[in-house]
Image 1 (cartoon, helix red, strand yellow):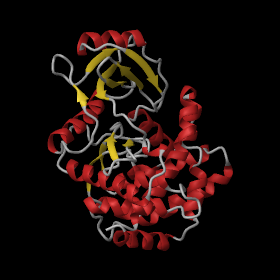
Image 2 (spheres, one colour):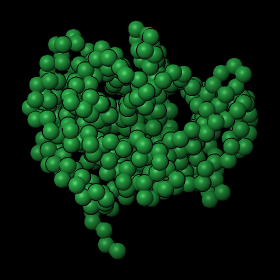
Image 3 (cartoon, helix red, strand yellow):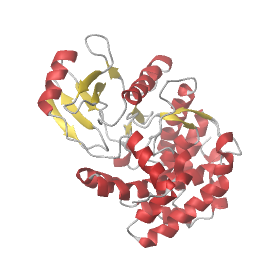
Length: 359
């Protein structure tokens, strides 16, 4: 069957992202044995729901850990990039609450596992960060600003970081958005397709001509409300930055765009309100160029649309993850519609005003 270039690109990016296929869950007893042998830790393993890999919470008598076993389609070098970014931040900015990597007894930061079909999976042990994630709280504008400021600090700290795999192909990378129009035809609800097409139009008109002008560096890539651990009673509010699974080299403004995409529609009557508070905080740590700021809301819309499109695609192809995928994206099309209903000039004006309101 012939497929369009856009669909072929999407398939390639899904494969490189480790999202193209399902896999047999790793045996818990094997994981326990590897932890005993390589880390000298043991305890109760609790499997956690995730997008693609096998993840466990390990409860021991003294500490809890997060144990991750990579998807068999995810390249070892890509996993090494994620680990290297966390270890780099621990070295250059130890004050940032970035999840820590636990070293094995031989001093290495991972254990390679060869599966029965000859592929390699990577086991890593990370600190378990206690506390609610941002998505489970109801933050104030100032708390959202602190969440934004933390991402700005992370981006500043990562500016000089390099890795051989940082130019990985990732379907979530917003810079590929305009090349994925073929996903629209796989959207089951035809009423959603005009929304996607409008976002593609905005992206093609404003961002595509400037893609090569945008400042690039390695970014977190998925600073979503599920990857920020908080303490509502703490003045700092943010107590953990977790999940570097989408780390890559891309345009820096695409990092806050991911966060904005997840905040759109949280206040239905004012869909950009929380996003503006977040950006005001982000700019305390890393100011955004005046010419880049108008591109930010379009990038956020692109990311939200991308998630809606990808969710439909993957829910069919990876049925065992269907509930997890649809649960994280159930309101995406509603929020795209709400956000598009606000004139873009008004959104940009709100972002500029937010610089002063929370300065």
